[in-house]
Every structure is written in structure tokens, then in C-alpha cells.
Amino acid sequence: MKKNVVTKKIKIEGKEWEKCLDSAFKKKNKDIKIDGFRKGSAPKEVYIKKFGIESLYMDSVDGAVDKAYKSILKEEAITPVCEPKLDVKTINEKECVLEFTFITAPEVTLGEYKNLKIKKPEAKVTKEEIKSEIESLRNKYAEIKVKEEGSKVEEGDTAIINFKGYVDGKVLDGGTGENYPLEIGSHTFIPGFEEGLIGLKINEETELNLTFPENYTEDLKNKEVKFEVKINEIKTRVLPELNEDFYMDLGYDDVKTSEEFENKIKESIKGRKEVEIEDQYIEDCLAKASENMTVDINEEILDDEVHRMIHQFEEQLKMQGLNIEQYFEFSGMTHEKLHEQMEPEATKRVKYRYLLEKVAEVENIEVSEEEADKQAEEMASNYGISKEELLKAYGSLEVVKYDIKMRNAIEIIKGV
Picture 1 (cartoon, rainbow, N blue to C red):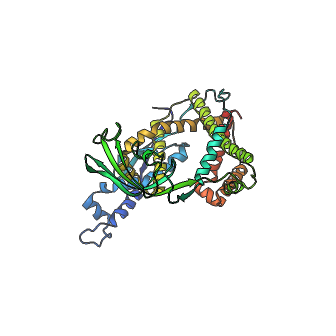
Picture 2: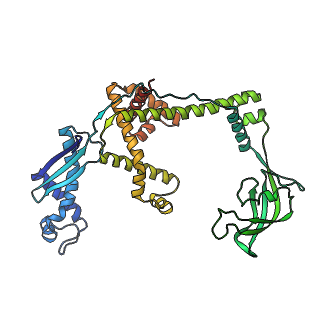
Picture 3: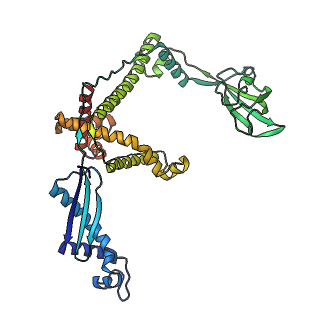
């Protein structure tokens, strides 16, 4: 048995056990109809004669567990880190003996957690990245315009088409469409289809003789296919010019020139990269420090973390209008597979948590009430809610204190 596994027995007897049995009887008797008595009015002796006192035992245990649990925690000064295991050792008319198996925090021996010699790269931004970001923004704000009569289909245009495919002289199942918007160059259709439309005008028709590729479905790969296509309409994307109007649309009211705009884009890209680099640097530091420490983690602690993660996952699904059963149905996943899939991440999280808690202990990191209160005020302001609402969501100010303590421990591991 691991050192952090504590087993405690508690006996409930006499009047205390009698109260538990009485409470269980009252609960059971509410829904019981016994001949000669109104529903819920039969005396306890009559009930026991008919159903046996054993029928009250499990409800009696339920009523006794909470009080017994709190009594042990108070007397033994035990701080469990997950749900204890309960075993009913003895149960009869006179007494009940419960055995609780508690899991406390495992012993942690720190290795090297400072001066980890992990290099954090500098955030650099290339001209190509700036150019690509600007083009991405221009495409995002592009205006879609319908081309005039007589215009031709060009690369990048969206052609609104009618099409019908034929294989072996028969209409291709699923190979027809009307007013279908096809972006030329998107490679949505088989090779040669989009290319065959370039240069066509509005209301112009064409016939495309193509071959399905080798990597297509088994019944169609390498087969010849004929498509009849008509161009109904052509739409094109008109990119905005790089001028003050565009800069203002992006929220850059102080930008006047293309050079200033490029500098803004560079700062934006650099800021994103710095966040990514910092996150990865923290991850690398925690991974290295946790590799250097020694900790024997109980299976129960890992299971508890996995269950917490699954609960978080269920909440995310709810936000998408799904439940866990629907997810299992369309993904082919099972609860067991999901549990197994989450175990590596759960193991990492648990290791990092005990690492940071031990560092905080060794480094004597303390967080004052005032510091936590100030942090709660700032967080509430950032979220646009009151401090009371934030603390309700967090649970208590102690949780805010804990978060600050963990962040301070991370700073020590980083070597800041």
C-alpha cells in the first residue's frame, strides 16, 4: 500500500445507529402501502415484520456516511485529494462499521527545477509573413461583384454553373447540379473540370471530356466521364486598395502610409508569436522540471483527473448543442476509449500540479488576501462582470489565491 493511502474505520452504534434506521424507515414508509394502514402510516414494527430490517440498511448507511466522513476528517486531520473508497464492513440491527480508504497528496521529491537551460527563441517576422498577412486581410474584406455580360471566367472567380455528368452514356448519380457556385482554383471538382471553364463567357456552354483520377472511388476511378456545363453567372472578388479607408476599416485610425501599415502588421504578428513562444517555453520548462522530480501517482488520482476532463468535455459539447451520447454515436468513440485517450494529458496535468505545489511550498510562496482581492477585481473588470460574480464562478477567493501561487511558482521555474 502506498504511503499516501490511509484506511480508517468508524463504528456507528447505539442511539446514533437507531436514528439512522428511523430516518431510513420514514423515507421508505412514505411510498409503502400495507394492508390495514393508510399509505405511509404503518408503524415501524409492522414494516419490519413485513419487509425485514435488512431493507433499511442501505438507506441507513447513506444517512450515516456524510457524518462519519466529516468526523474522520476532523479527528484525523486528513486532506483527501479525491473521492474516498467506502466499504461496509459490518451492518446489523445494532451497529454499522464503515471503512474509508483515503488518498492524500503523494510525496514529491523535487529534482532540478531552476536553471533548466532551456532557450527561448526570439520572435522574428519575415517580409513574406507580413505580405501574406496583408493579402489575407485584403481577401477577408474583399467585395464580391458580379461580372458584366461578355466577361470571361478567370482563375479565382466563382462561376455559377449548371452541370450534368455522364458515365458509360448514363447520367452520373450525384453528378448534376444547378446554379452551383464553383470557385475556380479551389480544386473542388476532378482535375480538368475547373481549368476547362477558364475563358468561358456568361450563358456559354461547353462539354468537358475527363477521366476520374486513380485515387477516386472504386467504381469510378480511371473511368471516362463527360460533363455538360453552362455558365449562368460569374462573380469575382475585388480586393480593397491599401489606403487610409482600408486602414480605418481595420481599426488603425493612426495609420496613414503603407509603411506604417506594414509596421502595424509586423507588430501584430510578432505579438502572436511571442505569446506562442512563451506558452511553449513554459510547457518545456514544466516538462523538464517534472521529469527531474520523483512522484508516485495513484491510479485513483489519475482517474479523478480524467473524469474532471471528461466533464469539461461534456460542457464544451453542450455549448455546441450536443451531449456525450450523441458524440459517441457519430464519432464511434466509447467512454472507455475516451478515458484511455485522455490518460496521457491527465497524467501530465497531475504531474505539473504537484510540481508547482511543491515548488510553492519549498520557495515559501504566500499570497495575501489583499493581493488576491486585487487580482479578482482586475479579472472581473476584464470580463465585464462584478467581483462577486467572478468569485461565484471561481468558487472562492481561495481559488484565486491558489492560481496566483501557481503562476508565481511557474515564474520561479522559468527563472524570472
